[in-house]
Amino acid sequence: MSKITSPLFSLEGKVALVTGGSRGLGLYISEGFLAAGASKVYISSRKAKACEEAVAELNRYAESNGLKGRAYSIPADLGIRKGVEHLAAEFAKLESKLDILVANAGASWGADFEKHPDSAIGKVLDLNLRGVFSSIQLFAPFLEKAGSSTDPARVLITGSVAGISSGLSGGTYGYLASKAAVHHLGKSLAVELGPRNITVNVLAPGFFPTKMANGLLEVIGDEITQANPRGRLGTKEDIIAASLFLASPGGNYINGVVLPIDGGSHLSKL
Ligand SMILES: NC(=O)c1ccc[n+]([C@@H]2O[C@H](COP(=O)([O-])OP(=O)(O)OC[C@H]3O[C@@H](n4cnc5c(N)ncnc54)[C@H](OP(=O)(O)O)[C@@H]3O)[C@@H](O)[C@H]2O)c1
Image (tube, rainbow, N blue to C red; front, side):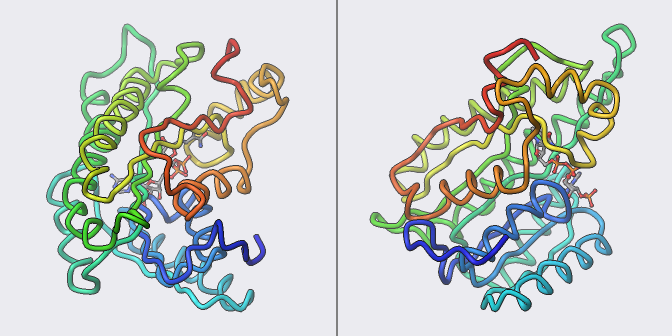
């Protein structure tokens, strides 16, 4: 990803926090934010070492592309309330305001209907729904300080086309329910937080090759690709462009949308 210079998509001087930013879509989004001029991109995930490695990778990228911004990490388990509280408390020691929150950390679990563990449903909902809600709730004061009527602070929730289409469940019952839930949560919070100069929008990716998706893609990747109206999987550029649009001046007036980034797959059979 080379430097992004259009003022319409500039994040010049912005402070962002991307949960689940140590790999996959969150890492891509973090890189895109640095490319667009963000001054600080905080990433968070459970594993401190993975966070450190991701920060080093992002900062190597920033330095080699002459970007001013830098990445930082605050490891935390966002599947438990205490973890989200820890993240907010550590962030408060470093910053008083937050321009962009990407509530992206997520996990999945697939098992046959008859054998699906109740505990797995709970675990997935704890991170994908409760963790998202807690993150937005605890970071709202920081976002409110950063937002203005002409330039609102932004919340991006990573949902999924699994929360829209019921074509392919793969036994991910908790996951698909969690994603439908955060889509609706995002719309509701858009209405509630809009007047506080915070917009809330939802990214709904289709299949992107990441650690989470690779297991399923190894088994039925060809089928998924062929069924996709655009005949391919998602790429790093696809997720960066969509997240940047919603986080930048270009997305100033967009509030409460669920944006599928999937080549139209949510309208087809897979
Ligand atoms: N890839 C796709 O095809 C696809 C499609 C639709 C939606 N999505 C959504 O996109 C988001 C990112 O997924 P991905 O595909 O990039 O998956 P991924 O590569 O597995 O990344 C997941 C990220 O979340 C972090 N994480 C997991 N559990 C956590 C916890 N309890 N607390 C804090 N962080 C945690 C992981 O780091 P640690 O393991 O270090 O915690 C990692 O940084 C998820 O919300 C996912 O549902 C992905």
